Amino acid sequence: MSREVSPLSESIVVLLDPNAKTSTEAYTQVLQKHCISCHGTVTPDQCDSSNPLKPSVLYEGVSCEACHGGASQWIDDHLNESWIGPSRFLAATGMRDTESIVGRAKNCVRCHVGSRSEDGLVRDMNHDLIAAGHPALRFDLLIYNENLPHHWSSDSEVEENFSASAIRLRKVSRATNLSAAAALSSARASDHLRDVSIPWPELSDYDCFACHQSLTMSRYDVPLMNQVKTMLRVSDGLPIWNTWHSTDQLNLRDSISYLEILSPHRSDPRKVASIGNRIAARYQKLASKIATEAAPDTKTELNRLLALLQKNELQDWHAAAVNLLTLDAIIRDLPDQQRTVLAADVAQLESMLRFDSGDRSSKPPKHSPGGFDPQEYRARVIDILTSRLNPATKAP
Image (cartoon, rainbow, N blue to C red; front, top):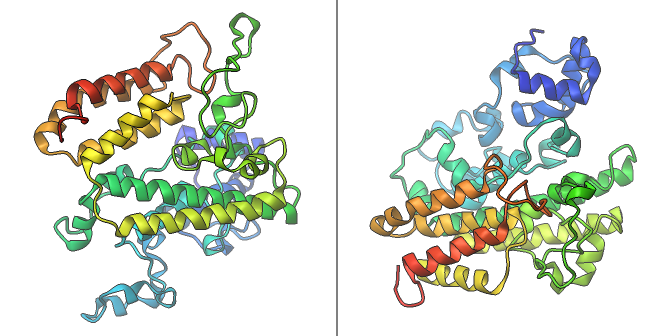
């Protein structure tokens, strides 16, 4: 098999198995075990390393069926005029729901958050893959839907529903993300109980920056005990569970039992398997509820966002990034003139979050990339909301 791949892809594969550098067999086995379940359109048999990997699997990549489902059951029927309505997406037809907001989000998170059982495939972008160089998965339906090559009618009722409210779309995305992440945590725990070779606890379930930070004596800096903590913080010395997905959604401080179960030092796979499924069901139900509600009011959302920022500090990069996504969604729903006024401000906030923005502080990061100051970001957002929009007195 030809090895015409990008340098980054080859580097990841070789780091996962050094033998892959010289052995085509070892190389393809890594692809079958870790990669093609998301980067291809495959069956469980094709991911079995005891079976040969056909070059066509790699050449075809992510095809139509990856999102729309295996077409063997509906390829003929979907050409008929009678092929309309929700009945097309029943499990028996094999066609996936890409028309509802929740349906499209659930389709995406199978790979862009991960799963260990959907379609009989393991789609688990775990800590081994991150350590080998694979980017962490931080899915956002609004951004990904825009980036997807448009192969639909933009003025259709389906797409008008998607574009009606960026706030609603992003809220559905966030809830669906957390549901998928919790289900994945549960599946990892259950699979570990069956096979101890599957790592536990899985480090990709926790905040990367809690461990990957400066620990040299010259830059030693312990957070003060009276420092305001994010509601998701277990303690100053432990990483946060599924930070990107749970920030601003899951108030773990309201449930000490959740804190204890999801903390890595007390992590019991049996308990995580159970609680993960409960969280998944809770937030999938929330996603479905939000999707059917009226578009949120921008003034109400701006006032809510400002009140939260004035009351609570932003503790880390994840909290700031999620805050920016929330603000961005609200701004997208504003009238054109007000959206234009805020465009430069949003661009400035985004630049503050970029990993290559450079060090602006002599202090080491506690739960963030180097140089990022969450309080500097927070102050800037509060200034924008009060001086530019003044939502307390002026409707957007």
